Image (cartoon, rainbow, N blue to C red):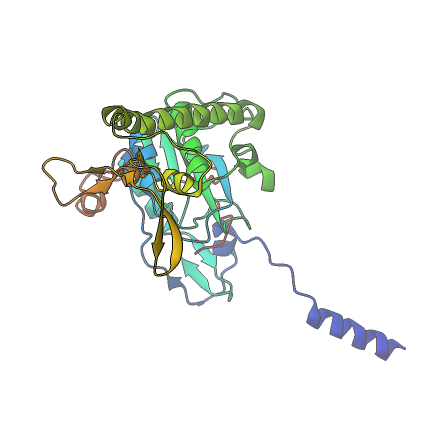
Length: 344
């Protein structure tokens, strides 16, 4: 009987996966084996650009995000740095250097130095900083980094709520991302939903911040619809004497509206083409071209669908030539950049 029990225990252990331990940069550094090879990760690629609220909205509108699309957005706070210690690009570069020194183990158990991704956005008093590429997964919450995006509010919000301009920019960034990705803002995630941390700060609650984001999205949609409809209405008034009244329920009129055409120029005309009956109707189309960029002709529909402005060029070249001294960012007693996720 004892032999059978021992055999059963051995079989059970072989088919049951061992729980994966939570490994932090600090834990790895204190449990390294003597003489163990450390694989150096390539330098972390970041955007490193600070955008105003309006610039960020236009940037997100024009962003080409590959499948699979994100399904969740997480809100964080940095705890440290705070707005008082924030130094813009110097702090961003210091955080990049800090991440590149951290040790972690990959899925094969190999020891590596340097993360390859981090949070996507840092919102500070000087604007919305692009860190890891928003098109791809980053690192933010242990076990919950696949198909997620992460925004860090600069500051410690365990006692006091964030205020403008950080609060305003956070609302804009979260609103623009939820709208662009087609996500329900009422399902916004906090870091503490999946952790014992207070992040994004105990005084930041969903009951408080989600309605603010929801209001921003409502106003964004209203303004967007007004702006897009103004040109079309103006053109329709200009050629009103050429357009004919139509039945909105016919197949041709429905298709014309879906294609962004201005309106009907003729009534429906029955025709026979190659011994088959057709209904034909001519519709007005509008083409636009910016002066003097004559090679950038667009249809009215294409014009209305495009972002209001293209994002300005990145600062990758400026970062390469960056000569401003970078202040070291010493980790605080409780590490706010603790590795809680899967490195991509």
